[in-house]
Image (cartoon, rainbow, N blue to C red; front, top):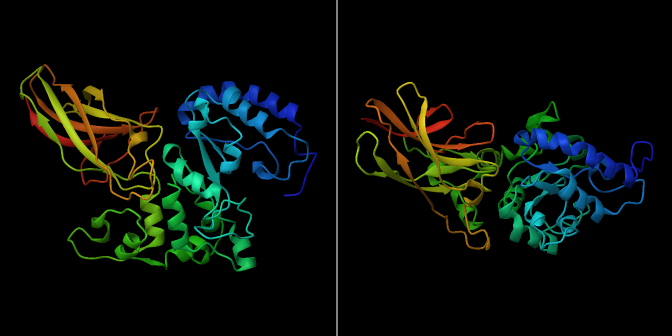
Length: 358
């Protein structure tokens, strides 16, 4: 973490590198979930830089020179996000990668950059986190072992929920140790989670998650919750199809859905499709915007009512008789699909909702 002029770079070189990298990001943007704004200091974490730097200039160049329009960017702290003018469109594409997750605790000396419960930075993230992907990482396990300080699982859940975490490093504090069960996340497996605790802390969950297939109550841990609710967890509530079941007809599909996940579903598109008997897509139509499928109010975290999103579209049926399926897709730019949190058939990256004959 010490300053290192040999491995660090002055500002003019950093800005030149941003220009050189732009064509690569443009070419590979379909593969990129979010660009994390490194470049400055030790580990690219925006501290311990060896040369004088203007962070505002560098962030402006990241947003306006390096990343393609529409790509999300993450900086380590809200105070760094605030270097970018909030009246510019790019501000709404900046999330946080919290490289010092210790959960919802007060002021500490763990290197959180002041992103602690009750601070302006914390509250800013509570207010803005719904709109962009949020990421984080725990400390390396050797540090936990040396200091005896671990991130408590329940404190972590409070932070993950308030800051609507989309992703979390599975390496830091877990897979970085041969003794994974005694790491931070390993300890989370021993912390038993109850419906009452989630309710008391106003953290959303699917009630059926605490039941097996036969309706029998099962035990869940903090680790289980992070595994299953990090990011999005989309569940369709029902499907209504209206219109004539005849060749060439147009039917209307309506499907209310909920998201029990900690964050919305970013960088994805959704819609309905008709598949033939060989599971080939015959026709499809876009419907819904996964990036706006919030689990709870985007503007007021304190309102913990589960939101319902009504997805609808008009879909033209095939012109030839045969056996068909209607499905719902949530896919990325490469065509990789996501499963609904329903027990439905998943074929060719599509969740099957209905089968019928024409």
